[in-house]
Image 1 (cartoon, rainbow, N blue to C red):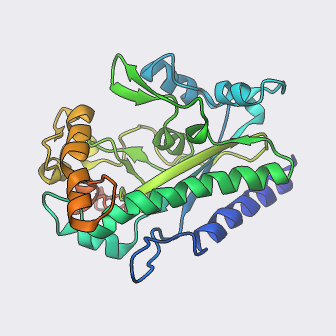
Image 2 (tube, rainbow, N blue to C red):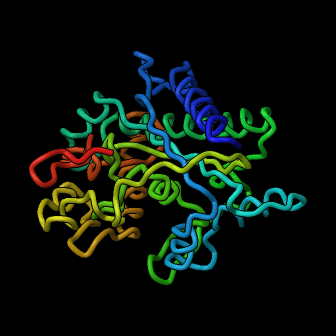
Length: 293
């Protein structure tokens, strides 16, 4: 594609994502029928970005590069990684949802549980919507996390992991860096969910305004904060990082029964480390001013 065509394609994709987020599908399904997510953020990266290979080498051989999952999905197509574009999005939490969860100290608020359940169901629909939209326009596309081949694995270095990470795709696509609790700190903050698709389309990659994968975290960049340690009711976040097993155990043994008994919703969620922290809704102050992308 020529540069002008790439810009037009990026704008078309952005419009498709934002239009879907503005639709009635985006709902917490409460009596007020409130939306689950506010205006999304969008980033692009290329399939041959060396960070994808670096991530695979770091996490484990089971982790997919964009080309690997694309070839598994479309085995008859002969493509090279430089022809693939990863389209990544951030769905920021609504302010009212963050406000509710900010007040909690042990259990998630009802709106947060609803965003984890119905908001993620919407996110799944957004994946399918973008795959369908791009395919209809003639661009073969796969949503790795929606693939029947996607699975959980054990990383020697990180424990429970998966064959594709939406947060890592967002990181490569210029949308944010990781915090102490493993959450992705974006220009809209850490209280969000994310998604991605890989498409056989040419779009210029987004600029990465950072050099280090922990750059936006005050704990790593300045040796301060650590608020997410205090906020974690499971003790799963320490100065050494995020204990995924302790976090997972708390979600399924504590918050899931709580969501059913208090809200009648079969879901799990917590999000306390994503709310009531400096990076909840923005990239936190750094060097006396807010760092923005």
